[in-house]
Length: 254
Ligand SMILES: Nc1ncnc2c1ncn2[C@@H]1O[C@H](COP(=O)(O)OP(=O)(O)OP(=O)(O)O)[C@@H](O)[C@H]1O
Ligand SMILES: [Mg+2]
Image (tube, rainbow, N blue to C red; front, top):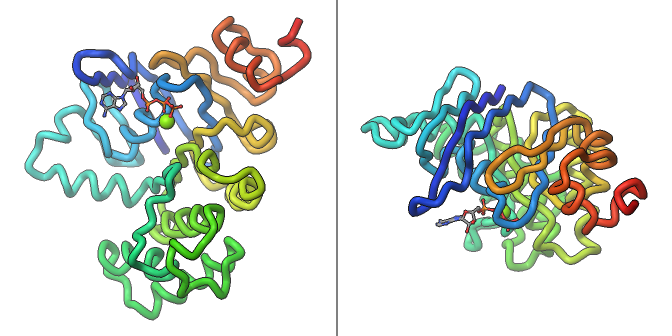
């Protein structure tokens, strides 16, 4: 589904991703953890074609991104296809404030997929039901809670029926009492075997939903494995130190 090979990315000469190799299979839920500045957001943005990179390849189904992709004249076409296959959900929701929940959800299906309005609206209503927001279709983002806005953002991404969803700290700008409602929508997707890569510090959620956990530090994948392996029995000092902050596993405190 997603195959990344020797991905390197620098900002102003500073290496941010230092040769990432990663494969994500259909139906996998990969949770990415790691300290601030380790390159988690950059990795997701590269996969979504939002960031050019210096070397390596990112394969999404039959599409391939290389450093050259961003220089070609046809670049927007390839990147549009990538973003159609891979949806992205951001920490700050990034809904269009002047559009209602329903309009936010149908915009890309109308413009990009050229779907009939009636069909797009019917699907948007189904999605709103699925995220427990039936009845809120005509609300503007400013009148919705953070948790509601983030759920609309997830529905907006799903409306394009992407093959995979990338979520970058989807709950970290929410008040604690709103985190659960967003995680529950993501858990539902996970139980339906929706392919996802999720950057999150919700360790409990990672433990219950991830098929694999990656620990990224300083632009490298330091550890990866089952939640049990990485969260409960990390091998590297760096992962142990990082997880200690979350008060994980008694084994780590010894
Ligand atoms: N547009 C940019 N220009 C220059 N440097 C950048 C840019 N975006 C990110 N960086 C740098 O790249 C590194 C990785 O950033 P990234 O946002 O991917 O980290 P992160 O793991 O997502 O961190 P956080 O947990 O704080 O969100 C950081 O050192 C950051 O300062
Ligand atoms: Mg980030």
